[in-house]
Image (spheres, rainbow, N blue to C red):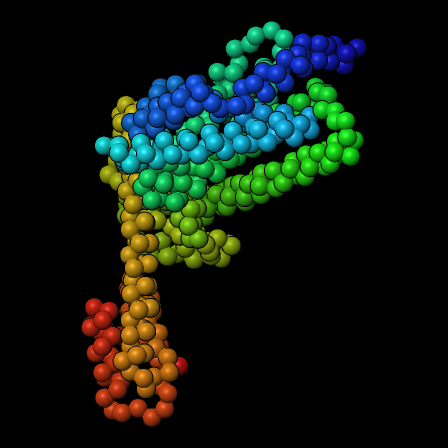
Length: 435
């Protein structure tokens, strides 16, 4: 009896308008005329909100954005095996994405601000929470649209799932040449769109929407197979994403135990910390107050990470002269901006280090080729950097030359090569190694 009561209490079928739902979603899929104008306006509004850190403007952009309709159309078409609706939804979704990226890129190219804000940063790394919001939001959206009576859930779904802001953040990445921002934000949009479509598909199946009938039964069977293939293909990236998030969560717990707790044990106070996994090297950024964490301590923590299977994580610390109590005394906006400024500073330093390293590597490659041409008595000449640690455990780098003579050398060949490379690589010290 309790089971029947629960079933009646949660039943959706008696208030479901199947024909009306298919009609509403199908008619809203096409983006043309006024919808295009609204899409571009929503994109520019979202850009302004992201650029000025205005949450209210971003919410306004999400409310008027028509991105949700083609995404729901993709999920519905897979659920009822409607090939025509699927292709139309996919085409309009791609057009909407392209227009949003174009308008947001143009905005950030001419924007007088152009700085990295907290709202931009928050949309560059998808989390498991984003998946949950997208899935639950998608369920609420299709359940709301399938009712016979009008509901007010769609505006809330549009705000919760946040489709337009990640796309505009991708536009910022294109405009600034920051591929980390572009790929991270676009991946967030893709994950959101994917799980909204998936939840739509599941609810359509749960509500037993009728599969589209075709006169040619072989064609119908073919479309059914295609629907299943597309569904499986769309699930592959989501499974990979969930697996990645699970591994990252495990790594974060281990880093908290090995690194963060260790820094706190020395009387320091952790203000904020996080993992920046945008490069092949994953950075553990730690913002703290208290005593200076020495290079020796960092090396010790780095070795501890390596011993525990976290060798690809690099620890970076930033000491600030402020305590948590002082931050608490500040207004919320000021404290948030302060932490955001520190995060941007660390990110900028890392990008500058990476850029200078790539410049040095390219210069070393060119110099190696020039030296090989200038000194043909050597079969091979390779220039690299070596890291040396002295007794004080302070690391130092030396330009290192690996060479292989082709045969008998003259007395001046080695000294001439050394002088050439010192001049070419702007250094007064070389480490020579014969292959």
